[in-house]
Every structure is written in structure tokens, then in C-alpha cells.
Image (cartoon, rainbow, N blue to C red; front, side, top):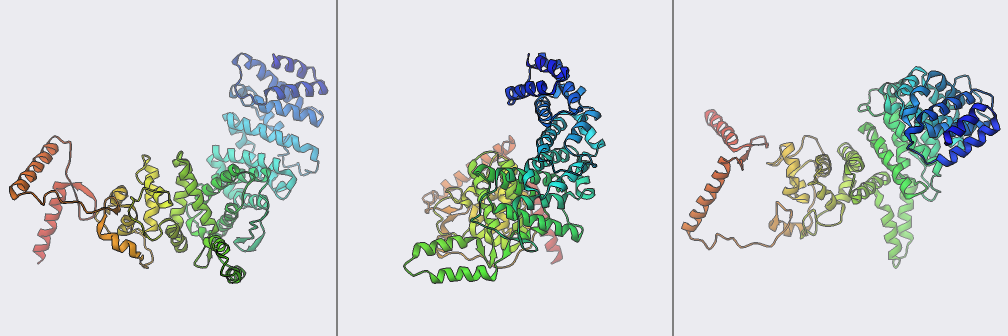
Length: 560
């Protein structure tokens, strides 16, 4: 009924009446996302009527009302087939100021029309394959980049930038060709990085270092939304960037990583928005070549070092609480390097673990990022090792029992999701410099068995990557407890009485034969398959393992 009334007035052609009826329709259906199939034909005709109004010279307020209703109607995929034509797409491009001839963007009164036109394009492109093809034909990505260049330094146009970036994200998500066009032809990487710089109001103190005001105000909601859309678009543009081939690429990725470091150290208007912002920053950092992630940490300046030392020296000896606060704040400093960004990533990872759900989507990106950073950058690995795997003192509890980051990660090593448990185990393994003995000390053999079997390291040894040869130092508490630690569970157990100590030799022989017969029966019925370790540390059926060892012995004796 609403559509029929609106259609009659739209066809009549009086601008004031059209504006009023469409405003009423928009207010009533603002939250409508599911439509009745009985009125489908009327909605199609209403869309066609709106496009006919938009080509006329009507007031700006009438254009906005038309576009608001068109945005609502474009949520319905079924009505878009006859509506999505090249002519109608060009009408929206013209209203969004996306035509190359439109250089003037000085009329603030036109901004709502531009924003609504871009929102309509977002819905239509997302819901219509025909619109996606037309966007390629009309070179929409290039037009969007041109519009961004006009607005990138204007603070009062965040709504336009946000809608532009959202549409750019959708195009790059739906078309792999557009990703390549954005990356190389349209120089999307530096452009979108500049959009982020503008949203964060970054002031550079060095080539890859920005000034951080920890006491500054949080980002506004508009700036945060704009930054999130830019991060999502950048993710699509860089999704295939595994290697750096040119020096210019390396520089650009380092600039982007420095901007993302700044992003991690600021907050949004709410806690949820801050987490969303940081989550998108983590996803994008995963696309940055690992050699360029060294800019996430930076040396302390002479002023910072002097200020830290002076602050401690100036505090009286009786001010223990104040000294403790200063030391706590300096916990993000390691080996003369500022580790604030890595500390934020570690805290972000722990929050995602504590959520207890959606580990694959929410946790694996940050775990994978920290793993690669640790593997490639020694200072990051040592800092994370200090935080995640501090020297063992109390080994009375199992490694998976407790509330520390180590306990939480060890619990993940036996998670039902294969991808989650693999990356959790890999992270701890890298922190242990891929040394089996060091990993077993912190996790126990039972928790680490899956990783070691997959890597062929059940017999011990170390991984393929090279790390510095500095040795871990055990605490006195660990050294004293070590002889009584159960290697399987990884914790201290009281010595248990040996049940065969009080048996006679005949009883021992009887129990041994009983066990052999049970294993033989299980093996013949294929309920149990005896396995052994090959010389390379991988698991294989016991017969094959024994055969390989006998071949090695024969070869050795022949050589002798």
C-alpha cells in the first residue's frame, strides 16, 4: 500500500509532494531488510520512477529523499535486475560526483546527495552481479580513487570518504582484477595509507616513527569508521603481497606498517570500536612482508631513556608504590627498544583467547602474526618469550592449569580445531627457538606430541630455522624439582611406589606374558597398531621401523 501511494505521487512529478511522501516512506521502512513478495512489482516500478525523478532538475532535499528510498529498496535482490542498467548506474555516478569532469566539491549542501548516492551504489553492487560487471565497464574503481584524492585532507567530509572506501572495499572483494588495478595502476597502496594518516592525524618524528600522545583524546566515531573501511580495503589490495621485489615496495610497506603501529597505540570512541580497529590492523599486518615488520619496534630516544632513569632516581626510597608504577609502565621497553605495539598485540591475543569462541577467525590471525614476527626478529621473540614463557619456578601444576598466558596457550595445543592448535603450538615452539627440549619443559610431552609428530621431532632435536645460540637459564626451583617432573604431564609429581617391587620373579614373568598376549590380540584384531620411530624421527609401523634399524646396523657393520 505504501509503495502504491508513493508510486502515484512520484509519477505525478511535483517535487514537494515527492519529497514528502518519500520521506514518510523512508522513515517507516528505515529498518526494513525483508520485503513482501506480493509487492515486488510495485517496488520495481517505484525504483524506475525514482530514477526518472533523479534525472530532472529537482531540489537537493528531494534528491536526498529519492536516494534514501532507493537505498532501502536496493536491499531487495529480486527487484534489482530490471533496475540495474548502465544508464541508471551513470545517474548515480553523476550524483556521487564520480565523473572525471566534476572537479568542484565546494558546495557543502551537495554532500548528503553524494553520501546517499555512494550508499546506493554499495547496496546495488553488493546485491547485483550485473552491477558488478557494469562497475568494471564504467571503471568505477578509478573514479572512486579520484574522489578520495579530492577529499583525503578534508576533515568535514568523513561520511563521503567512509562510503567511498566501503564501495572500494566491496569492489576489491568481489573482483580480483580490481585488486591488481588498485595496487599497480591506481597506486591504491600509498593513497589508502595516506587516508589512514589523515584519519589518525599522524605527525612523523622520523622516517618510520610517529609521535604518540597517550593522553590525547580518542578517535571520533567518524574517524574510526573511516579508518576501519580503509584498513579493509588495504587488506584486499595487499592480500597477495608475500614478497617484496622492489625497494619502493619495501619502503611503502614499511610506511604502512608504521601507520599500523600508530593505529595499535590509539583508541577509538568505545572499547568495541577499539577492538574492531585493532582487529582490522592485525589482519592487514598479516599481509605485510615479515622483513618490513621491524618498524613495529623502535629504539628509545635519548630523551625517553633519560626521562625513565630520572623519574626513578627522583622518587624517594619510601615511595615504593610510585616506583612500582614507573617500572610497570616501562614493561613495554626491552633491550633499549620500545615494545608498546608488540605488547598491545599480546594483550589483544589474550583477550581473544579469553572470549572462548570464534578462535579460527578471531585468534589465528594475531597468533600467526606474532609467530612470524618472533621467527624473523630476535628482539620481538625475546620480549614475547619473557612475557609468555618466563623462567619456571612453580611446577606443581600442570602446564595447562592456570590463568597465565602460557597456561592458556598450552590449553589451545589440544583444541579440537586443528588450525587453532597447530598455530598455538607453533607460536610456543618458535618462542623456544624450535628446540624440543625447551618446548617440553614448558608444555609437557603430552601437549606437544601433535606438533612434534607433524614435524618429525618425536625423538627430539630442533626445527629447521636458525636462532641465536644464547642458552636459557633455569631457576634454582626448577633445577631442584626437575628429577621428579613427569615428562608427559610436565609437572611435579610425588614419587609413586613401584607395584612390581614386591612381586616374585614368577609373578613378574606371568604379568609380562599376560601383557604380550593382550597386545598381540589387539594387534591381530587391528584394534591397536604398534608403532615405532624411524631414524628421522617420524612415526611408522613397528615392523618397518625395526627393519630400517636393522638395515642401518648391517650397513654399519659392513663398513667396519
